[in-house]
Image 1 (cartoon, rainbow, N blue to C red):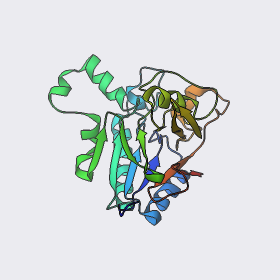
Image 2: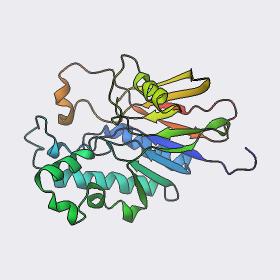
Image 3: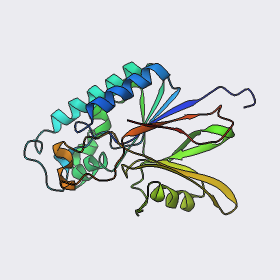
Image 4: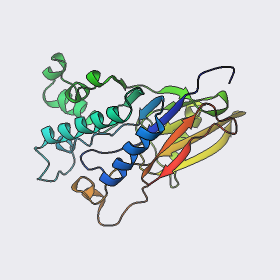
Length: 243
């Protein structure tokens, strides 16, 4: 690695607080504390913001924005305690964007007051950087991978990592996304360049009211997270953890 410092990046997919899978999130926090990664990337949709959805809402949660924000703040505080020295990047997902669309359409003056979802969570106080554009971090073999939520590019795929691969080909570089709630990794060659694409899964609980819109049949979603290691000389891919 030419004397460069080791960089391990923990990548956490969609959690959908307060509709998260509590046992899986507890395992995540324990893993974070034990592994002590230099970087943490939250792929977006950490919050569900069910109260601001334009879709059908559960009556028990449609007016509980304050409860959602308190639960989101608690998770972020727990994550910071588990990783006091880690650099944390929080990507704005389509569920966080529910706040932006709601305020732009109904109370645009809130933007003039600086009232945003990230300020409501107090992310600046926790030293968390909010990302609204794709950005890169080191992976193995001296390469880099680009992170984004995944909703920025429309499309879908029948197989895990398929949507991520489509995005990678559009960008011409390796990408890691959330959004699909599926976990997968695909390696490919595009325009003579080796690229790979990752979909990170999710950490939500399908049996909670926040996911009732999906119907009674569980979808092909996978809970887990990933870890990159810049000192991995064998390949540039992350280690996949499934819970």
